[in-house]
Length: 257
View 1 (tube, helix red, strand yellow):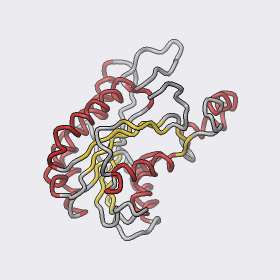
View 2 (cartoon, rainbow, N blue to C red):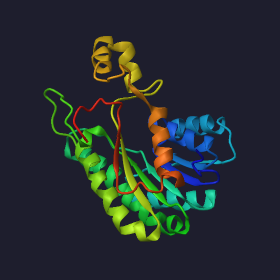
View 3 (cartoon, rainbow, N blue to C red):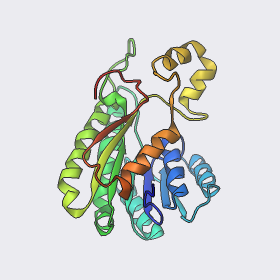
View 4 (cartoon, helix red, strand yellow):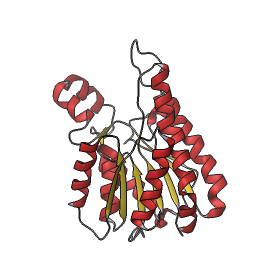
């Protein structure tokens, strides 16, 4: 199957590691040009160099960006559109993932909910000009179930991810006439080399083994497997998918979605 991503222009917010980096990598392999952003210069440069080595016909643009800052977020979009020559796909993979206090809630809600609103507002003309405009939120199965954390205070992560599902539907319904789709892809526990679950595998084998048993096929979904779903859903080949929430967790979530 041809996805139709050759020559497309893609912005992946939060792509210096893990799922975001895997998403950018898959788009490059499909012939797209990719813009990435991150909060720290060192990790952003490492990601840029990694993606440059992937090859392909597309180019890589990287910009250090604070997505909690409205001016900086708008500048990211403007520089991305200029560098890539337009924008077809926006993938929001960044998350505040902060602590339970008010400051943590505000950072999470700003990064996960308000930042993509700002990006889409700034990118609207470019997305409308595309013949395959697409927005994809990287959500979480934390939006459909509670993960037991004994003694923990309520955090903004799950609520923010749930809000993304409503926000994506809002965008899909209101921007559809301009040819722009919006969907949410929600991973569960996802493995990437050097990532948090990889560290758990090494340092806490008992916890790791208990986690693995939650999966029917006795392994975690990989970041690349999530990225491949994102590429299909956001591509012209997935044009019929709109206002949809798709769980990519290998059956870790036991409820019927």
